Image (cartoon, rainbow, N blue to C red; front, side, top):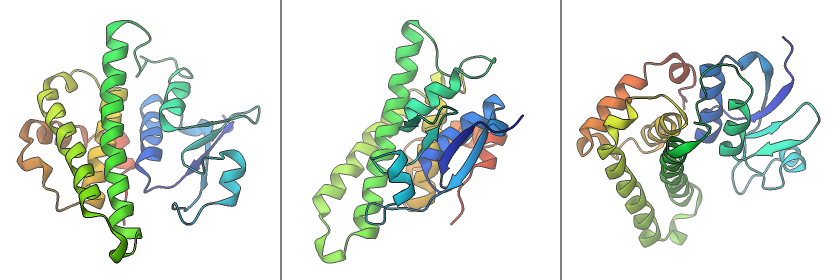
Length: 207
């Protein structure tokens, strides 16, 4: 099958990783051509901006030339393109619960990425410590919720689990001193188990 979709891609982006994990899980890798881009808020990609004015990845170019952006939108689209069990429940309370958990995982990830930008890209004399502490508070509160929901997470590997696994992977990749496992032993056990899935093994970022 020839690839009919183009994904703007960076192997270290946790948002791109979510999409790649879903492609692995649903057997759609052959339908997508990866187009690599390296960017940051201060080093945009002109090519990407032509397709996605927000200048963010992932961005997915469809066969008709239209473009989807934001990982949540792309996940929803791709989940409608395979014949297996949906990874985003189609209706009912399960849909809203799993999407809410996925949204919380994304919020934790957003806070981690913003912290990375503040502490790595911004000049040291312009960094705002209280703002960074506020982002860490969001991460801590989210981790507390997921620690309590660890039993629920074990039941399905779906959009919520994918989003959370990629967020935790980013914490390990960019904030290895955070030591979130100390306060979240059940969540740590869940993550240790799901990290063995081929989809997560194949998409683990490397420095």
